[in-house]
Length: 160
Image (cartoon, rainbow, N blue to C red; front, side, top):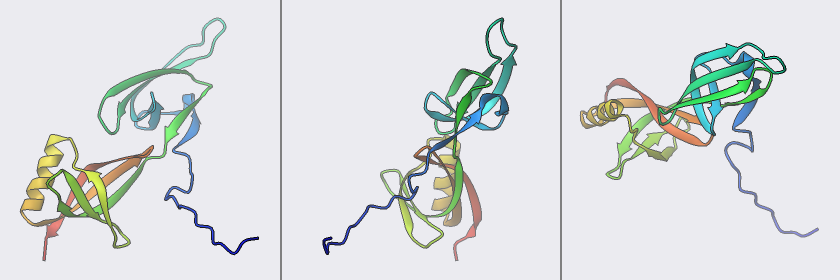
C-alpha cells in the first residue's frame, strides 16, 4: 500500500436519487410527478376504465414547478411513475448583484451565491423593493432534480 492520501470530491446529495418511484394510481392532485423530465405539481388526475385487454390509465396534468408550463402524461395505473424529491429551504437575503444573482445566508452561516432572481414579475418586484427599502427579507428556495429557484418571500422586519 502507498502512503499517499486519497481525496474524494464530496457532493452534498451523497449520490441520492433525484426521484423515487410511486405507483401511478396512488398519485393525487397537489402531489408531485416527473413529466418529460421536469418536476411538476399535479393539478388534475383522471382515471380511465380498463379496456378489453389493457390497464386502467391515469391521465396527469401538471404544472412545471420552475417555469409554470403545463405538461400532460398518460400512464397505466399499475405502473410506477417518478416522483421528484422537492425541498423548500429558507435563506436570509444579503445582497442582490447587478447581474441578477442573489447572495443568501445559509443556516450554517455561509453564503449561497449561485441563485438568480426569480423570473416571476410580482415576486421579483417585491424582492427588489423590499431590499431597496432596507427590510430584512427571507426567501424560500424550492429545489428538485438539481434545479433551484426562489419561490416565496417573507418580510421579517426592518434591519437594525
